[in-house]
Length: 321
Image 1 (cartoon, helix red, strand yellow):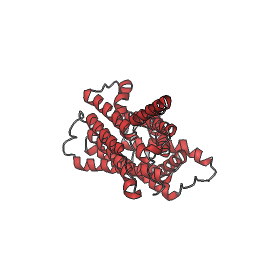
Image 2 (spheres, rainbow, N blue to C red; image 1 turned 180 degrees about the vertical axis):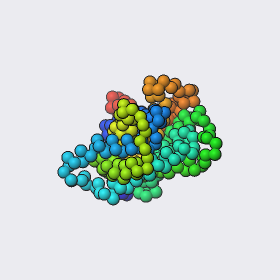
Image 3 (cartoon, rainbow, N blue to C red; image 1 turned 90 degrees about the horizontal axis):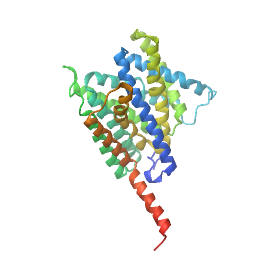
Image 4 (cartoon, rainbow, N blue to C red; image 1 turned 45 degrees about the horizontal axis):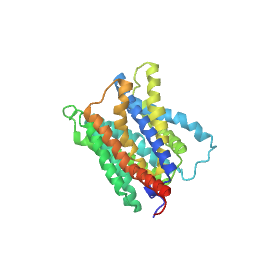
């Protein structure tokens, strides 16, 4: 079996699993805030190109100095070919496909299809390519998570503007979810360091995207404080810290388990919208948050692990009979 095999749940030490879960939750939390920031930015007048430019350029500016401190010595395995492949997976092609989907299909489709496909691709690529076996509780957890996403999306408008091609939009979300799932799988397969990999990918992405942005788009005529605000949402959180945390999660618990955390972004965004924008979720959305959380618990086998620890502790106290 290949080194890229998904780490078996039972083989993960408790401390490593806990660290991976906490870092994965922090990545999902930052992405949720980032998504709220996208909504704020679009309402303020920023275009998708403006936000994409901020995401790539700010992340590159933050992480490139760390790459330079290595004095030209790239980490083992971080080749230019791999950086380019990862940049395609989460760079301009991903942004273009995802943003195109938003213009064709309703938001309700995006919050279900894209993270759902990401989970499926990242979990089943190792099964198809590496011969790994997906634990039954992981399959059940993924199904429950998707049900939670559907519940969150159910209250959203059922159709976009008249004349839009919903099927094409849905295919865009399938494509974006596939790209992110492939990124998750490759990062776990190649066992690359989180900070250096994110920095290299951000630099390549920014260099490839900025010329197109400057030539084809006109920056939004908005006050500097709004640009600074979006630089924080897009670049600091979405483009840099969240991806570094996600990459670290993959290195700790494997790509299959790590792929569950992007699916927590919609329920977290629902909850965070309360203090940030004053938007309160309805009953269906709260149900979706609860169901999605239950799906994560099932996928991580948390309840079974807890019961096993209780049983083992009881056996040690009572001794053999």
